Image 1 (cartoon, rainbow over the protein chains, first blue to last red):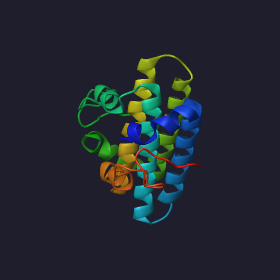
Image 2: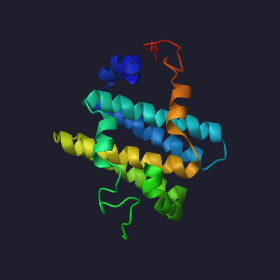
Image 3: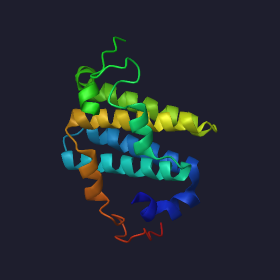
Image 4: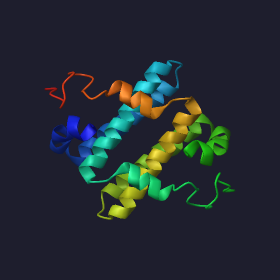
Length: 87
Length: 87
C-alpha cells in the first residue's frame, strides 16, 4: 500500500532524504510518548511504520520477510522462546 | 510474537529505555544503508521492527490497526491514492 501511495515521491526524495524523514518521525513519536494522548501516540506509530515502509520500498527490502527470518519464533541471540538472555 | 519473546524484558526496561534502544537501532540501520550489504540492511530493518513492536507492546498500541487507520488506502493529507500532495 505504501508503495502504491508514495513510491513516486519516495523515489524523488531518495534513500538518505527518506531516512532523515523517518528519523524525524521517530523523534515525534518520542515526544508523543512523553504525553498521555493515546490517539496522538497511535498516529506517530503509524507515521514511523509508513516511513519505514517507504525506506524499505526504496531499498528493495521486504520488511516482513526480513523480520520473520531474523525473529523466527525465538530470540536470535539466546535461541530461546521467550528470550532468556542474561545481559 | 515480540510480546511472547520479549515482554518480560521490555517491562523491566520501560518505555524510555526501549525508545532509546529503538533510536540506536535506527542509527544502525542508517549506517547499514551507507553500505552495499543487503543482508546486513535486512537485519537492521528487522531489528527496527522488533524494537518498534516492543515499544508498541509496552504502550498498549496495536501498530497494524494504528497504521491502517491513518493510511487507509489513501494519503491522509491529500486524500488521494497515489498521493498527490504538492508540498
